[in-house]
Image (cartoon, rainbow, N blue to C red):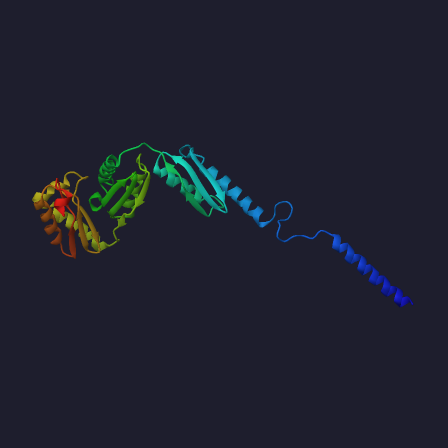
Length: 271
């Protein structure tokens, strides 16, 4: 009889305990816990911290017209700046903000309105004087402008020369965007020796020495693995041909491409 009573008591206790469990609230795995500690809340907090850091990095007068937002670690920049270099700088500052994994740069440059022709002439003149005294004659950088968008190409002797040209363009009022396509000539002791030898061969010739007088208007010499390219503007077809022959006579030169233009000659005549 005693055994039966004990078994009945255990069964009764088990039934009551199970019934109580049915009425207790069950935690949901799909919803964040109270107090905002779920994945969504954590992401939101990270975005808020990233936004705060990005805003602090953009707390400069040149970025007064810039707005930033952050979602899932991606920062979006909108608004306006006066110079293209400020647009670039805003992106560089934002990408280093803690919690920012990528930047969508939608900033517009609202500088002065300048015609493409005038802007191109201004940039070409400025580039011709850039890096004078640092081997400027060995840079052959071209520039074109369309709707305020500057495409810069050609050859630079070093990365310093290339970056100097891009910085000059980026700080020029009226530039809306920059597409850099400058090729940096390969590093080579042999090419450096050829550059000097070609320069001496050209500028040391009596009828071509005049092109060394104005450091901004030289016959430009680009060398890539022993291959020489000549750029610039000369006074006559004779000077163009003479420069080609002088460059081609230098020992170690594998070939010469002559892109020299004759002053006053139309593009149709050059073809």
